[in-house]
Image (cartoon, rainbow, N blue to C red; front, side):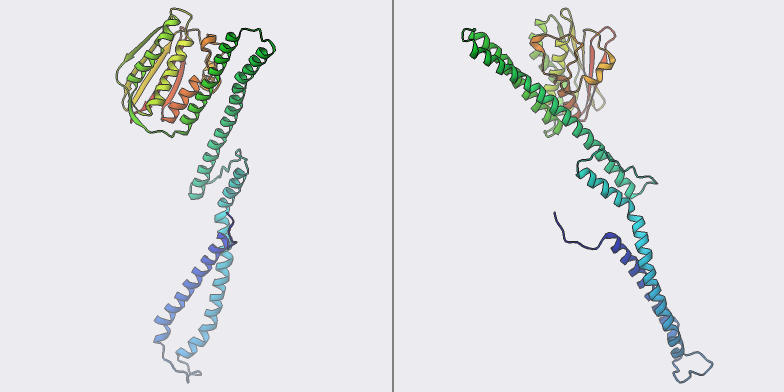
Length: 358
């Protein structure tokens, strides 16, 4: 918004300092007049006398007082200008950093030195804001690039299938339609996962009191046929674990964790265990599965979008879109909780979620 130019804060402070000194000088002169000069006899005819009188003192004191007032005014202006510039120097640095951030440069930091005061507290808060913005922008750019790449793949496959069907009319139409349906379902699943991830990142949801043990049972009941198909046992144990949040998002988070544990389990005779417990005002959910060993250096990447853990056992029918753990981590973060990953010594993974109660 364009504004009319006005006096700077430095000029206003300088004028304030000078005005304060002028008022203080005027008050001092008033005190001298009230408590000293008014008690001196007014003898305007005794200019040549030895005794002091009001007329003599006023005509002797007035020029000196006027000169002193003028000096105080100039001294206040100059000194106020210099002091205001020194005091407002940190604000100038903060303004310059804000202009750089407004121009798109989020890597700049103020890092103001010196002891703690209001300006340094403001600069530290501004640096923290820039750091968070820089991190979010970098994450969004990386996520947008990965998402565009992932969405392009099913669209390219669909176009290839259609081109093949057009060039070869004798090709089995049912086979082409079945493959198109599979690719389309994958694209829809990816889009829904992206929308859910975006919603959980924004944190715009109503919070309710949720029992994680009931959510875990519901998720396990939904995924029990998948576990039986893969020959893995799925067990839910533990007691009540209260957490505050969105029941829909928490159900999706638990479902993703359990499905990820089932899919990345051993080909046969594996197990998935879901435990819930209360730790003070925190609800704890632990999902543990058997499987191949997980390298420790791979753990930090598993909660990143589109990081599928290439070294883990996978199947084509449940390849997913690489957003299962990313969505779970985003939902937990939006609820103010933590998600920790740890490899099992015998192989497999342990995911521990801690969520604050409502």
